[in-house]
Structure formats: C-alpha cells, structure tokens
Image 1 (cartoon, one colour):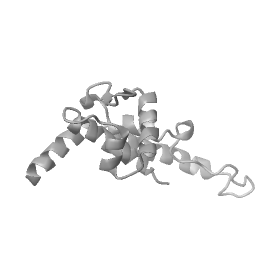
Image 2 (tube, rainbow, N blue to C red):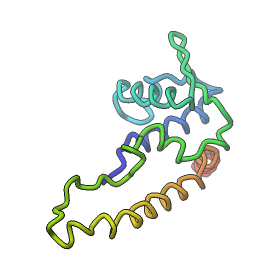
Image 3 (tube, helix red, strand yellow):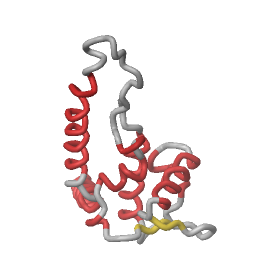
Image 4 (spheres, one colour):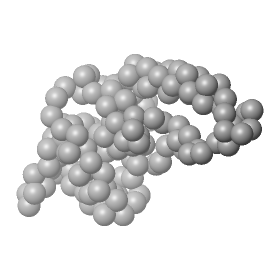
Length: 146
C-alpha cells in the first residue's frame, strides 16, 4: 500500500497558489514548471480538487482560487479529494479467505478492528496539519534562503 504522489502534488499545488497568487497567474503550466511534471497531470488533480469543492478554476484567463481559508483545509481534506478510498477502507482485504482453514475463517476477526484503528490514527494525524502550515513553512524557508 502506498499513497500516490498525486497527494503530495496536490499539496504542492496549494502551496504554489498561496505563495504566488498575488505575483503570477497560477495556471496548470505554471504549476507543472514548479512541480516538474506534465501539465496534464496537474489538470487531472485540479479537476479532483475542484470536484471536492476545495478550489475554483477560471478557464481561459487562467487562475486558481482556494474556496475557503487555508487554515480550515487539512491534509486530510486534500487526501480525501485525491486518494478516495474504496468503501471508506484504506486497507483492501483479500476477498475469500478459506473458511475451512482455522486462520482463514478467523482472519477478519483478528484484523478488521486493528486495521480500522490504524486508518483512524493516520486520518486523525492528517487532520492536525493545514494548508496554512505549508504556506507559513514555505515562506519561512524562502526567507531563510535570502
């Protein structure tokens, strides 16, 4: 199991939008330059973020706007938009453990609650960090470079 790079790319997008929104027209091409990836990937992620209600995208003239204060958007919100989990479960359980095997018939009872607790712990941790944290951290690091 691995969360795809689309999640960190989405966080990168938000950070760029916040850092550069007053200086540049932040477009998918602009973002692709910062992220060093294809603009098509950026547009796919922007579509997901827009569908989740986290951003608006102005076509033609370009430009991305965040729909609510970045102090209210958590890593979890972005994760939910970019990495939707099937049936709400992070862990995909193998379909048909053998009911004739003592381990097979008991594996769900052994693992289900533990896997739910692991998922909850990860999601709770993601809820502690906001896009504001990224913006603040980026501005601090940029200032220290000069």
